[in-house]
Image 1 (tube, rainbow, N blue to C red):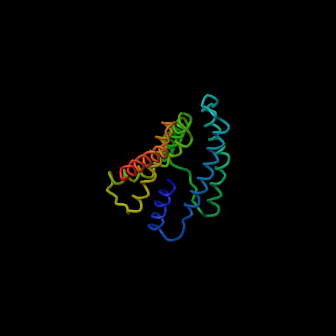
Image 2: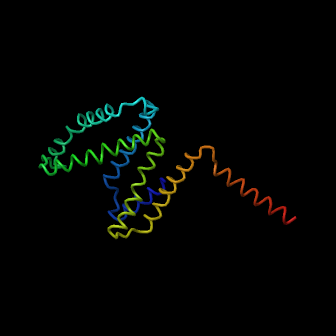
Length: 193
């Protein structure tokens, strides 16, 4: 899966410019913090019965407000981003996006994490790249380069493989494949003697 993300990212860099955008650096930092968040959450709360979802999301919102809100005026002071209060229409759209795009999706993701595993939940998030690409092709008729299609294959394959391996816990496809090859080669050697 990592190879697929690398292929897609390299092609995206080729389309934009030859220098690494600041957004890529922030994405890598976000991925590292997300991994820490997943490990600490699963370590502290091993089952969903031990977690109060309302209190958890309340504290997530509280800490985001306390930690992130003071940064907005600083961005305006340094001239990096213009800070202005939204009008009512923008406030409505941001509220709907916050409820559906953040709260509901995070709740469903966390529930899926407890029902399956943190690995499955995280791999399912990585499917947004190929699925968004396929929707863009289908609805907007966008054409992508071959490297992006090649990059989508490991992402989809890794999700399907991990899904099968977690569903059939006692199944070892590598050992089954080795036994199959051994039987085929052994039978072929006996036929030629």
